[in-house]
Amino acid sequence: MAKYILALDQGTTSSRAILFDKAGKPAATAQQEFTQHFPKPGWVEHDPHAIWRTQRDVARAVLDQQKIGAADVAAIGVTNQRETTLIWDRATGEPVYNAIVWQCRRTAPLCDAIRADGFDQAIRAKTGLVTDAYFSGTKVAWLLDNVPGIRARAEAGELAFGTVDTWLMWNLSDGALHITDVSNASRTLLYNIYDGAWDAEILDYLKIPRRLLPEVKPSSAVYGESAVHILGAAVPLAGIAGDQQAATFGQACISPGMAKNTYGTGSFLLLNTGESGVTSDTGLLTTLAWQLDGGPVIYALEGSIFITGAAVQWLRDGLQIIKSASEVEALAASVESADGVYLVPAFVGLGAPHWDAYARGTLLGMTRGTTRAHIARATLNAIALQSKDVLDAMHRDSGITLSALRVDGGAANNNLLMQIQADVLGVPVQRPAVTETTALGAAYLAGLAVGFWPDVQTLAEQWTIERAFEPRMADDERAALVAGWQHAVERAKGWEA
Image (cartoon, rainbow, N blue to C red):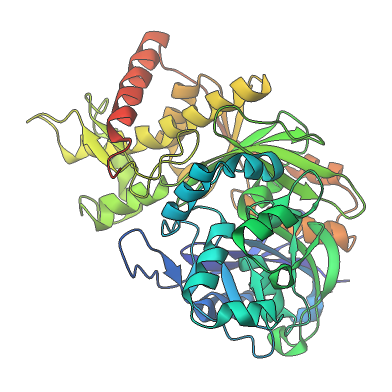
């Protein structure tokens, strides 16, 4: 019997692989960073070959670490940075252009034109998404319009579009699989989340050939198997989910009303709303969470915050006031408060619930007494306060009052940040024993498909809290902090307009 599930976690700045055992515990982990490309202000690209090469290499590395062969792996699950867009040649597998990353703002003018045309309302009604440069659809349109010669090739069926999951599945299967799952499809701006199909009207409007698009599958199902030369033997390919949906599943937020926040480069909050999509009036996204093989599609409300962990990276690389990201906690803890300083980290615009592509990073409230410690504290406050903005919007849309927030991602290990988060929300923040929940969710989806785990209830029972952070902040102090934050956000909006 195979002893492990292999999760491939392809992120914005690195590719990781984790082997999980039957107890849902990581047995081996490998990670490789890859280069970020910034060809123009606001543009972000990745080399597709670097994405695949690093992901393949870390998959091999964890098998070597654990001294096992591919025969010891029951299945492979993939989770991925979402919305990042690739087009490649079906015959050669060669990309026609770099991957356009979810953070890239190059299609903001096209999104403006769509809104001016009024078509954003149709997109909202069909996809649950706002018309923003964040999503894949306008990136596909940009590629077809700007890379010489590819429109004709796309219309002839010679090219394939995919988000990163599709690119990985294509490469893992040596081109046998051109697929995505419902969670990733729902982030493209092209998929009707209520009809469960690529939307002909949107494709026609954006002039995107249907032949370019992958087949949409459940998030948990056996799709095929890996080519033998990848890992030394064929392994079932059995799970796909976008990173935030995977983290929600890995956090066992399997019942309506359960919510999680993943703190990565950005932060992403998802609230499970069950088998019905809740329409948002507050700028949140209605998205597909997952679908198990033979089961119903599960919906979620999502709020996407573009810059959270990346703000700490900016303290390290841009301001150079810390040498490593881990130093921020001690530096921020060296002062009682930010002393009236606010950082609005709108370096690439503001996401939910503001959706302002023209907002820019703003540092306010400084005096001669402001130190780097106050700026560090303001950065942690900003991460927590942006999350509060989203959770408040979720409450207004769904009527669900949060009783606790489950957290994961790198910055969830920052105890001071988690305490600030509990304080500004006024509810407990729960950190699980296994914080690698994105990869765990992908493992769970793949494992369910091949019978490695018998059912979802078994997974829910495996979830355990490592530490709970209880709110300690007085109501008046919280109100003052939030009011100052809202004032600062207004100052950051529309800067580039």
